[in-house]
Amino acid sequence: MEIVKVIVDRPMGSVHPKHDDLIYPINYGYVEGIIAGDGEEQDVYILGVDKPLKEFVGKVIAIIHRKDDVEDKWVVVPEGVQYTKDEIAEQVRFQEQYFDTVIEMKD
Image (tube, rainbow, N blue to C red):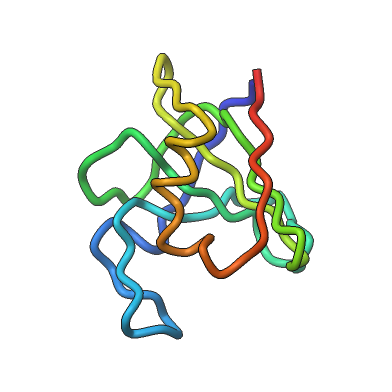
């Protein structure tokens, strides 16, 4: 699958800009120049890294489709790292629990 560069705007441990009670347990960011369904740049969850980041280059292993929202989220990991659908669901549950989602694995 595709290798992408992610700009991290919500590093691990940061607070959601609109929800004070939501702390990011993983790094979260976006891919510059790729526009998602919400008209903003493509959002990305970064798994497999255990420290706050500013940017990251990794492989897209899954797409989280939100059936009740206009945008999808990409799941990006370091090369050579793999997660199952259940492992991905567990890691992103902190935010995706509020949406009806389907995880599509990429090769």
